[in-house]
Length: 281
Image (cartoon, rainbow, N blue to C red):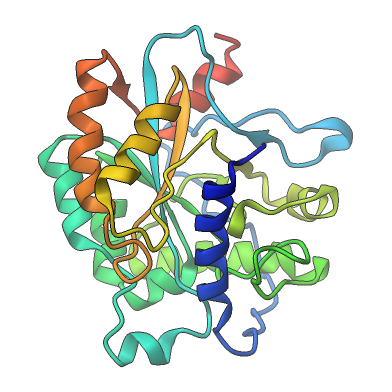
């Protein structure tokens, strides 16, 4: 995907800020499946078929001709080494954003790090049990899955699978037993080695086609314009659910939602777009 200079700058700023997080925490050895098996009453979430040679498939947007649908996604970022900053009062959550999505009745997909779920278990549980939302995996540590990813510390290939599995373990501990089998790479950075490493987890990697540009932005109008200028039918929009790193997001959402509805768009979760893509619609 080709990003504008402004969009790359925003992502770089977020990556650089999240890189100051200390020495990576070694995940425990995996002892089972990456995610819990859904209960019998729960329909298995749609996923994409594996890519060439069985590697993890990558999803960027839904079908363009299947109606005016758009998925707002929010990355709940927190790295493995940011506990001291949270204890000192830095807010990596954004409850007012979640409240706004509820008030506006906007379905959304929250890509959550395991460390975020550990820091905010009550919020993670409330999001995970609200039918308006779905929780997906954004890694445990928010360390990069490739070298040279916007300044983020990176994981060796041998620890990638266990990092993803550890996030699902954190979700279950917080009370989110049925997190979706979708994974977003920290910084959006991946290569074929990373895709191969995650193949045993059975996840579909979810990227995006619209960058919100909300990383450290203070001008909510500019964020809203960037989203509104980029959305097309089937778009996946990436924004953030972190007050300290994206303070203007909630205000921007209040502009984005009514305008897209005025244009005839219907908000959906990522699972609906993936389902449409899997059916070839």
